[in-house]
Image 1 (cartoon, rainbow, N blue to C red):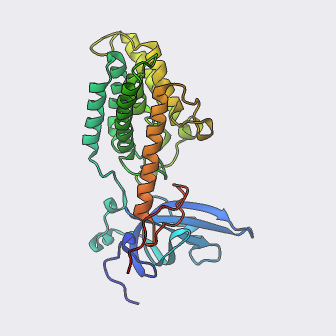
Image 2 (cartoon, rainbow, N blue to C red):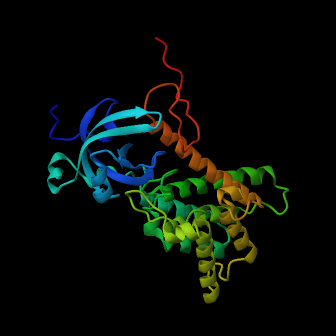
Image 3 (tube, helix red, strand yellow):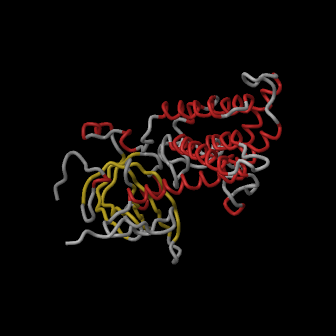
Length: 347
């Protein structure tokens, strides 16, 4: 079979197609079969699709995979694309590392990194402007903006996760801005519905906590566009406590100088405590990694704003990437169930 000089895109292949493709090796995991034989499950992808390659111990590719295939490296592959209950698969025939001459055939590294649909500069400006206008307490506002501005460049490029929701460059900022906007809307809704609540809903703490709820992921994840991995501090400490510590450090720095924005003075102790509580409780329950469960109305709001945004992204991404065209997608491991596409058109 003859193959074109310009390889196909992995994301364009139809089931049963045999083609040459350029792809990024985004995952390489070793395991053993029930019979005790080693194998590798490798994941190759472009910006819009990933496909698994199973490398068994009796495969002609096993020794090369074990010794030479490197996560984050680019390869030219020849294989047959298939879709089954385990998702997209590529039955590999040939593989080699990408070479400089492959640029003549259309290879560009930028084609393999998924990025946010939204401009990062505009998102960061929208986030800081919203917080600057909406957080009424001057010291708390200054503390939150310091935490964000001190990490602005990384924040604009970081993923929100290594695999699940918003797992792409700029995903952390996209998710955070969405959660803050939802939090603001929910605060306005419920503060208006319960004006007699005492103490009243603390909108400042809700917005501050929403803005910083995942900021610790800048240290928890390494941020690689090839597929973020957990750092040592990420595994041992986690983003929740890292983010809480950054908030405390910024507040302490302002307290030492006696300056914290137009209103001056250190941030109010209870306001900081409420903000910290939003951060440490945003996973909802201890089984999901929360050091504490929500005990305040603002923590409850941010917990659900965060969960909704993460799950909706997983649902939308599942619909986008799922193979086939039936009324339901295959079982989506991230979303925990098949997703309904719709009834087939009548003939």
